[in-house]
Image (cartoon, helix red, strand yellow):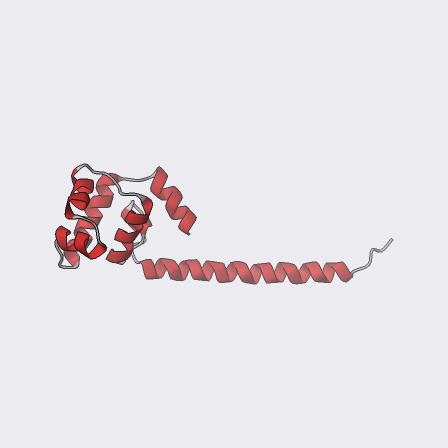
Amino acid sequence: MEIFCLIHYIIYMDNNLFWRRVKELIKTHNMTQKQFADHLGFSQNTFKGWIYHNRIPELSSAYAIAYALGVSLDYLVGGKDKDIVQLRLKNLESRKSAARALKMIEKVQKELLHLRPLV
């Protein structure tokens, strides 16, 4: 999922949508942009500069913003899944399914090794 977020972030990034969603979420947390920037350890000038110039920060800062707001980075750049907890649960379930499939494949491979050719 992290790779998908990175690819989505680079290719489909919508700067206006990113900052619109960030601003909405800051308001829902009853914070000002200054308070939010301070909370993350960004200078107010840096944070406001990103918004004013409509620039997305580097990936680590963008991720920190998403994490602090309790949403996925994918959501901030235009994705539909907002709830980071649900995304992580989906990711975990996908990994569990993949692990089960891999175990089944390994079991079949072991069984095939014990078969003798008919010839």
